[in-house]
View 1 (spheres, rainbow, N blue to C red):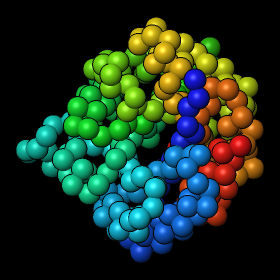
View 2: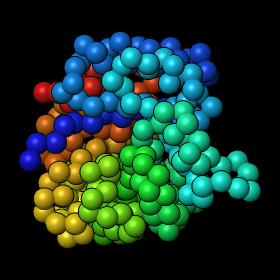
View 3: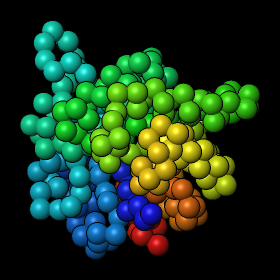
View 4: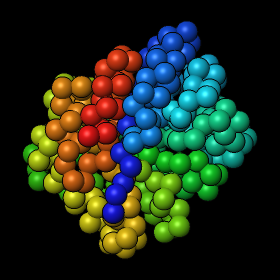
Length: 254
Ligand code: PGA
C-alpha cells in the first residue's frame, strides 16, 4: 500500500501576521517546485489563519490549525469552533499535541472529543501521540502510544479513518534538538500501525499515514523518512525557515 508522504509545519506561538504571510508565500512557491509527490500543510496561530490563507491561494499547500474546541458554539470564552476554522478554509487540525497534553493539561478524553468533533464537522485531523522521557526509560513507549491512539480514535469510524493522520512525536524529542533514531522511530511507528490494525483492520492500518515529529531538520529528514512506516513529518522549529522546510519536503519525495 503506497501512502503519499505528508509534511506539515506546526508554527506554534511564533511569528507576527506579516511574518506568517511571508513564510506561507515562500512555502507556497517552493511547494510548486517540489510537486505533487508530497502533501504539505502549514499550521499558523489562529490569529494568522486568514493572512496565511490569502498567501496560500492558488497553491496546493493546505491550511491547518493547531487546536479547536469540540462544542459547536456558545459560552466558551477563548475557544475556537470547527465552523470558525472552516469559514477560514482550514482543512487540517492538530489534536493531542504534546504541548497541549503536557503544558495545557489536555486529557485523553478531551483529545478524543476534539478529534471526534473535528472529523464529524468535515475537517481532517493530525492526531499527535508520544511518550515522555520517563515513560521511555520505564519501557512504556508502546503502551503510552497505544493508549493515546486508542483513546484519540474512540469516536472515529472505519470510513472516517481516511481523514486521520497520526503524528508520533516523542515528547523528549520536541524542540530539544534530540531526534529519535530512525530505528527507534520506525519501531514505534510499526507498533502504532499494529494498533491501528487491531482497531480498524489491516487495510486501514496500511493506508493510514503516520508522521514522525520531534526535532526533524533538513539534515536528518531523509534518514527518518526512508523508514518503511514513516510517512513524512510534523515539523516545529525547522518549519519556521522557508528554505529548510522546503528541503524537508524534498526529503519526503525520495
Ligand atoms: P520540533 O517540534 O520540530 O520543534 O521538535 C515538533 C512539533 O512539536 O510538532
